[in-house]
Amino acid sequence: MIKENKIAAVIFDMDGLMFDTESLFSIVQTDIALKHGKVFTLEIQNKMMGRKPLDAIKVMLEELGIDADPVIVAQERDGKYLELLKIQSQPMPGLFEFLDFLDKHGIRKAIASGSHHEWIDALLGRFNIKDRFEVIVSGQDVAVAKPSPDIYLKAVKDLKLSPGECLVLEDAVNGIRAGKSAGCIAVAIPNHFTKHQDFSEADHVVKSLADPALAKIVLK
Image 1: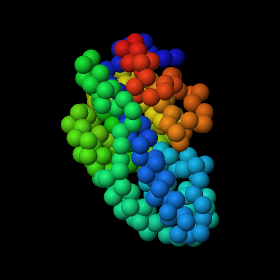
Image 2: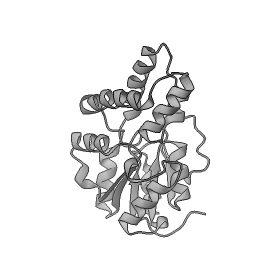
Image 3: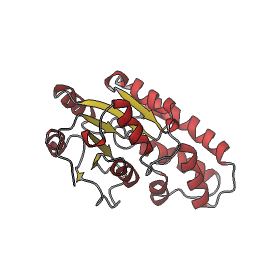
Image 4: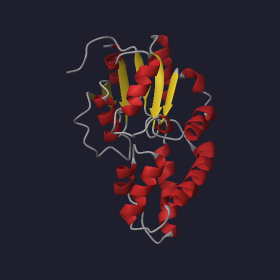
């Protein structure tokens, strides 16, 4: 049952929700797989989504049957990915307009991303929006990754709000499960990579950050 109290804060996932990072991940991981004579697939990428970066690499290596040190592969991936972030990353449609909308209505903003702080800082710095978020929680700040609720529970605690006052925006099922388990209202915004996932657990599903339906949900 969705709580009816007014939304006080929106907590954003980052990868694939605020920025089109999944395309960049795909480029880097495809290159790594090819180096080992393997083919990286969308199915594998979906299994990696929402996990901590090292855990995601472990999933990729296991799925592809690559016998390599995940720490070394992760270091290779991280270096290539960070360079792409700095020059090729792009915001998802409607991001800046939606941030303006939240500011206009006095709704607080936070980020809860499984990514490294370095990646989060690189993206927010590239678009000069870090100061627009009151709370930023990285996967490095919690012991267990999504779909565990840990990252959202920390974001809610740092905001000094109750979970029912917080609306979570996620592009993947693991994130929706994390937000719901934390007691937040969870809205799914599928992207090209996640559009075939089952979002039946979400409280709402909208097309994008620019979807007028999202604004109505926030102000309900």
